Image 1 (cartoon, rainbow, N blue to C red):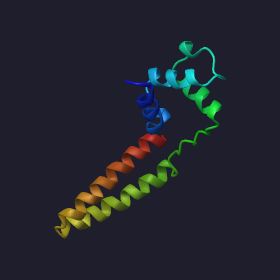
Image 2: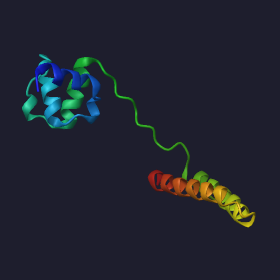
Image 3: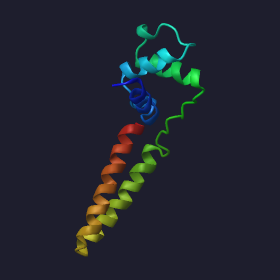
Length: 110
């Protein structure tokens, strides 16, 4: 690879998706960052983002509490039961998937 192709890859690929090797190459081009080879990926990301003035977006946590999510699950279970009685397999499948997603959210929130 030439220097031009590696620079193009850096521009296309987001920093979080880069490997440590690629991050080190990017950090070596920035004169403000020293000790690049002694840093791990997290440290490299922080240093590069600070040097380039990139702000991290906060990670969004689940917005609902466990009890709210469980109430939603109960509602979907009732809707699924009525869909099964009406022999509406498509809606029953949709409700089953929604219930599954909400259960995963309750595990993340707890």
